[in-house]
Image (tube, rainbow, N blue to C red; front, side, top):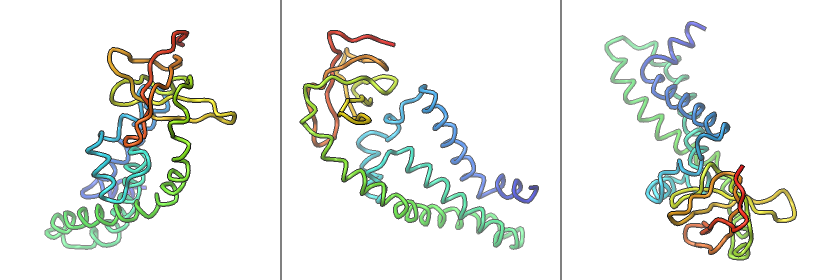
Length: 201
């Protein structure tokens, strides 16, 4: 246990440890409903960067979590088996190199691991279409605004969660009913507005 903590809490593994803890805390906030996972993708610029790295097509928080796990595992093992055996004078320089290498390798491995999920998302993409325009849904995220939000629409099964946006001053809250007014195929989002019969939770 002592060797584990020493390795996990010293450079360079400690940086991945911090990233992993941040991801776990963020998942906790999302589970509690105090943070909207859909707002964590960094907008269009962030989505474009993830796509160029081969990490697009899945939620940003999931990408960063898998990246943190793979980066931490690789760095921890290399730190334990290689870095700890080097002379003290070499460890910092080797640690910097190891950190950079782990980021590159973790990015590639994350892209491979998420490939099945991207295929599933692509297969489900036809469901997110203009056919849902005019339907009434329920806000599933903390809020729907011009930047982020999700709504649940009944489809005769378990229901669908769709990305949604609302134009100011509308900001529908969780549990309120909204009408899907239009579909943006470029952003894969729906413009929504409060239903006349909306009721908050």
